[in-house]
Length: 73
Image (cartoon, rainbow, N blue to C red; front, side, top):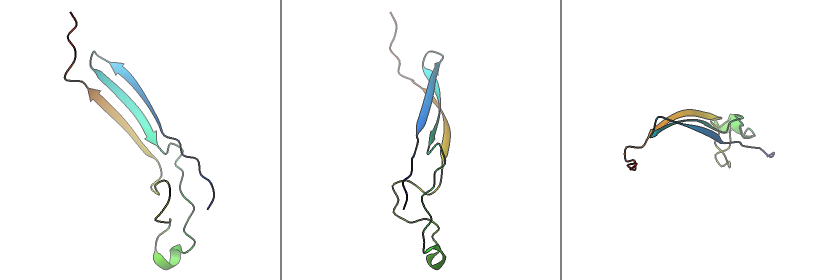
């Protein structure tokens, strides 16, 4: 099997006093493992044991809010 390069990234921006929004990706470049040479016989296109998943990239947006904030005196 050949070498692969995986990139995970996330960027977050604060807004309001206690909230933030983030966008990110796991496997940003949508890298897949090498195909399983015996795939036709067993029905598994990718090997079961790979250092990264066989589902490709995962992209998300997250909204966070801190309910317990410090009072500012």
